[in-house]
Length: 256
Image (spheres, rainbow, N blue to C red):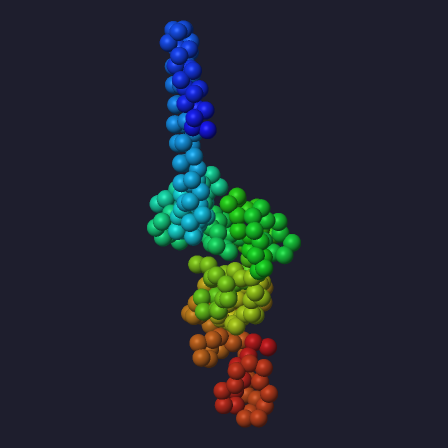
């Protein structure tokens, strides 16, 4: 083979020496082949490098580079490495926690309880929360601070709440809220219920039967006051008599 190539080169050289135009064409052809060989070699080297990088990447590979961490940060989330068009952050430094709501390793801008039948443009959890990067429509039940709840009830300042209690003492929860531990009137829970009469002052809500429902200690009592509460009736029922209210000795304090 080498002998054949040498013969070809010698023939070409002889021909070039005899014909100057052929010599110029031969020079251009040689130059083109040299450039082509260089380009081919460079492309081959790049392919080998990227192939080796990808094959040795033990974590996450993006655009031919290897990264230790990968996390969804959303459109507004910061990234110390490279953020993809799908809002994933690839970095060799630990990526900060999600600034919104994280669910199943992804970060979302919105979180809202939508119930079992509510629609969700993102991912709905088994507890019927919707995680999405698009605004979630209003809830079907009760909304408080951007989250949707199934139950809402006034529990007073001292009432317990399994969900979130507002500054106005309403309880928002996705679990049934226990009955009022004090006095309930028109769907609200109060600490005190006192009979104040038609002309008596009431710091809360007065009913049509002249009872005052309030969360403040009553300052006026038109009936009988006992243990900071006001009662309409005080009856002597004896030591063994029935009392529908509060008994003190032989006296019964009651509103009935």
